Length: 323
Ligand code: 13P
Ligand code: SF4
Image 1 (cartoon, rainbow, N blue to C red):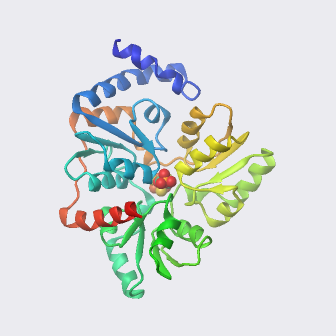
Image 2 (cartoon, rainbow, N blue to C red):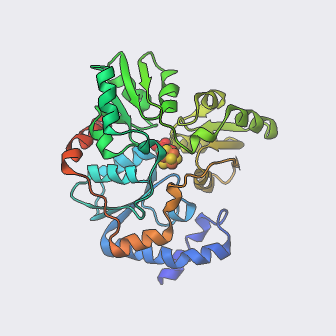
Image 3 (cartoon, helix red, strand yellow):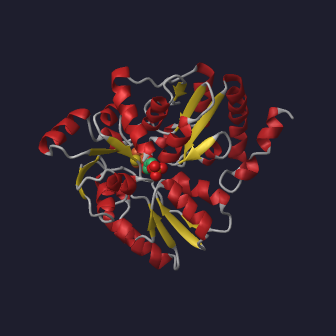
């Protein structure tokens, strides 16, 4: 089958979200990417916030941060391209030091990762001697290296309780820390980082949604402020939200998270009505089909981690995966 014919056959996966004229502009890049993946023995790991043409048409492995980290461990390929943000690519590199890990745009960052440095952690340790430091994966490798263990939104409570400590430092997302603190007896000391996407949702938004869309089921990411999470019907990682929709099949749902998530979940759940007040993550949106293609064509941009940092950062990630 010619590449163009096999690419056209992918359109049904995304036809509800991408008009035919826009799709025509994607076909050439999709065909080239599928071809390059074979030639380079490459796999594409895509986060749930990637646009539908990436998520449903070129990605090999999709999921939340935890799933991407877990699946990265046993990737059988020479090249791993991460369609996501920089900390996700660093995590993939930590778990695959011998493989080439590419990110199509080095500027795809994260406001949480920007909010804390290893020096901040040193000061926190001084102020709270002996208290273990749990670091959200949305951080640089250097920050991971300065901490005891990582967590994601998908396993945060488990990690907080699994350490057996009465008190923990949980950095850098203040809202995730406060949302978890409500579910556990472990005392949590938070940092003041916020996700620039999730901090925009308000409890008033939730009340308005319920008024305007009777019966709507409200699912919130735990990076949302605690009063938003308190008003929601369910809170969990992006994978948890996706699983909730697939298993509960609510008539109407709203996902208080990044915009592309609703498209990606809606594609697999055509009978569910999605209400879509969402906020764009400008960092996730830096990844496009054309820069994925360029990344595979020109082997750019290769993610490297200082080996002295990598040893300790890997330990923090592997410790998380072991729990
Ligand atoms: P998840 O781990 O829930 O996918 O979240 C990652 C993220 O960046 C959320 O903003
Ligand atoms: Fe970072 Fe928020 Fe974007 Fe996720 S959505 S990558 S936490 S800025």
